[in-house]
Image 1 (tube, rainbow, N blue to C red):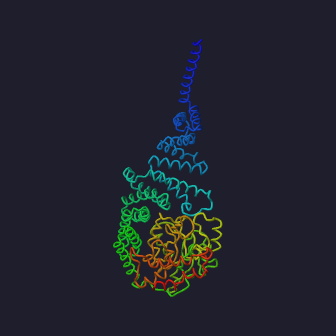
Image 2: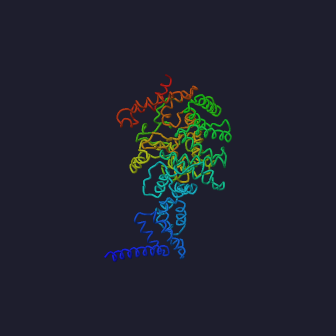
Image 3: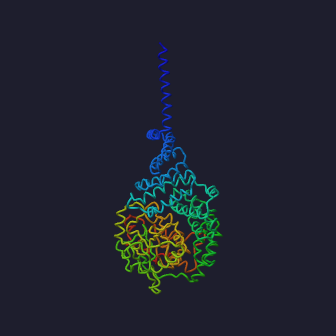
Length: 586
């Protein structure tokens, strides 16, 4: 009785083995069977097991005459499985082939961008860093204004889609980058290396503005800097440009020795180009002095500051600052404007002029109010030659000649009503400034475009503005880590504000670094002390800054509406020369 049962079981096993053998043969010789098995495993959540069947189906289809268009979609699915199996180099080859087809060009734009992003990630994971940065630098270009710290009204725009992918891949760059091994491994030619360095500079500048991407930024920028330094020289303007982005990043990370080295090399490079007595060197002197102060090297910091003041004395005269007569600073061109120093709704400048009338390139229709600026003419000079639009035109022309970049005015004057409407439309997302807090209402602020998008710190023009804008009466209103506007980060490298030449000189020479609003609020104190040859010393308390802070606290205490009402007596006193001038004599 047992024999028939045993025979039946044996027969079943033989049949099963035979079927499996047949099935194995079929999926190895029949592309449709192999593809069906691939799809089944993918659908069942086993992509790693599916890879071999997919590759087999692909190879058989190609052998039977399928063209690249026919297999493009299959290649993308196999690539996704290869990524899961950590075969990143193979995945990148498959994605490259698929994206080079007409099939890919016919995809929905977002689907194609997703595939490009997968290719970029595969490049990173396979240590093909130059290829990866090329993709994400291109994404950054397509992102345009969405790459800035501003709210884009259309969250579904392609620009935002691109920017989100660049942001998301920062951690993968951090894990993959080893600048020493990459530099030693890169056997490409000089031109290709410089192109990659440019891409890394753009991406590094983007990541440097995001606290969570600090390490990705420092890795990308350090590779770009060393590449330019090796191929162009430490004194080349493009190498120096990166020192101005990487140095502050190192300082923020506590790498003060590395920051010092960068700033020293940049200072000596600019000294050779501009001459030892050029006050433009003051930017690098301030940066070096700041590092020395943080290192506790106060004697060296003070020596740098004295050197800078000697440069200013030789360039602008012994009596380069004067104490202005007392006035109500609510009407002055150098009044502070922020969430603590509000503009009243009725405030409107009476001397607006079209920027285009002064040869300033405009990014919008010249007749729009937003393409107007205050004349802000100097009272003691020819108003046709000494005013805001003339000086902005000169600054733009100088930087355009130096950098070759396309520079234009993005935004000038905006009324209280216009600002209110924009903020109502966008809410508190991003750094769209509520009405009353915007310097644009004064007609003294200029947002700068580069090639039709907001200026970035990785643009050459930004370096030019940082070095030279003070000569023309402009300063950077919203530097890194400021708290002047609502929002998590209101750093705006594109936003430059006119305060007059003498005030801008004083800010560069004696003002608190990257604290323009505090400086403007305490301006009468700084003016009087500078006119008497008294400047802040390294490591010592800034008398003007501490007094201004005390006065601001007193003036802004109480109910919120009172704090934000520029017509109140307390807040008006902060903006009156008489109060702080009297304090500075005590």
